[in-house]
Image 1 (spheres, rainbow, N blue to C red):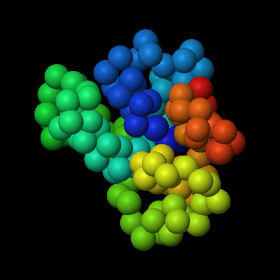
Image 2 (image 1 turned 30 degrees about the vertical axis):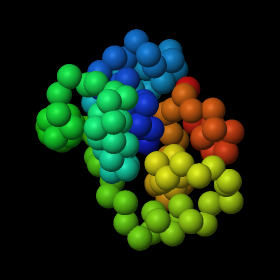
Image 3 (image 1 turned 135 degrees about the vertical axis):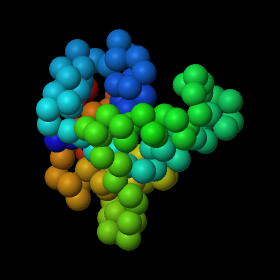
Image 4 (image 1 turned 90 degrees about the horizontal axis):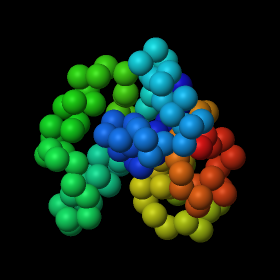
Length: 128
């Protein structure tokens, strides 16, 4: 099991050529092993679509429905434990999505697939 960062989720589901070789190899296991995403990734993607910074050729609702139908990616709600872990992070990074994804991975004790250098500089269990 692993946690997909928002960028990795988009690339895994829409354009896996953007994944690194190692990340792609790990993502190929998802149909057998499953993966998690934080619900905040849905929010992040939706905001980018709404602000015209991202086009995924479908509505965010359709994208989420497709993820659910896959049955291999579990969307983790952002609950009070994740928010408390987010707040407790000794990390000056202010991006709420990155902080929440890292907090989720820490609580699950899982690696994150991400190309985000800010995350990999902080969290030592990153696959890229």
